[in-house]
Image: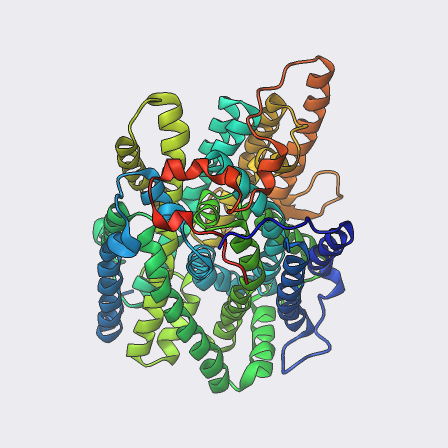
Length: 72
Length: 549
């Protein structure tokens, strides 16, 4: 079941993965960009649902980065 | 004030507690451990955990009384400020994804079990390794203390403990702790890994019921946010959305906590006990499910505000840590409140066990074997580790009994101030060896002293006690407030870089580096990882290749 170690990921893949992993930092540490009440979603102020949304986006971005850098 | 003991809830909690205790002892036989008498078996579960167990283990590790008690308590007191825990646990994953696979590879290539092992091998400096090890031990204690406060909160809401007699007041706490100590002692890391399944199942049930049922009884989330907003304005201690002045503390607490978390010995233990670096990366993508949960739990602090929960302790004083347990007690029937309390209590015990095991590994390898008895046998190491895990718990008790407990989250944040100062040696060291070992040691020392003094200087106005908070003025930023850990970290970097330049100019020699560039990328199927199998003994689980999706 041992697979041979494949080729290393390309430079482009590494850069893309880096950008995907950096996005959550920009989005979540720039607090004043989302410290607002409106627009609300299902009664949640923007401040709260925006951050919940980033849980999902970060998960997707991290998974995408995983696929990109995985050796094939 | 005395309150009647809730017999039904207490019976449910005791039943669950007995169940996990039995599981804890049985865990010693789980997955065919041939010999728990070695540190690798007792402390790393044989290093053969796959993605599912790891997911539960890391989750059990990262989502604790911090999640259930401390964060909602902060939201109950200060509103939005407490929600920093969500961005904290979100930006943690890209960091984990970037750094930890390298640590996994180099550790498996060289048989490292702790971050201090790595630092010693990388920089050839016993002093620097000792500094990293002692910081890990110190920082773990208040984190375990936080778990104790969580258990105490549950017991208090059930009417157990408290009162005038100091010994009787803490008796339930001591009983719970004795059981934890006993099964951790006998089963090692296998105990919390197995119990984590029970714990997470309980937590998911309780959280789903809590976030679906309670809002419905209070008129929905829209009405909860409005009521919480009004209650916060009336209290004047916080707001529903951060103010302009609140943005800096919010961002620095999130970033500082995220950078600190995976430096704790227990986080690294969980990562090293996985089967491959691939497992580490894949988990980094799915663990955010826990962050969603954490966010919903944090909001329970606002729900308690909206519901008008009165968290009053057995001593008659308000105690925000009781907000969520009291809310559960008020809205759930007794038997389900018992289930919820069991979830909180076990959710505190599991990480406390993992943390004390990790701290014990650290002490044994990097203090005992390194400085006291270099030629001690594997059996002696396992024995010393077990005793050290007890000592660390006693240290945690000291924190609980002496520090300000108004906001328990400060325990965890205090640990973060200390542990973050090992970041330059450990994390930067994974990528470059440019920093000089003595510069790293000096940067660590300066920032540890600065961080501790700054934290000591934060006095809680209500109680007059020191270590009353974890945020302070950031020098040179014109009155902005930030998490002390991050300020100290910047000071650490400045000292380290400055002294590195100086020491390099003076041509002071580096220590030997036993690692090579390729070690940081080694996969589990890499033949160079083989030396570790000789260390762990003939464990069939350790020889499996990386599982691929």
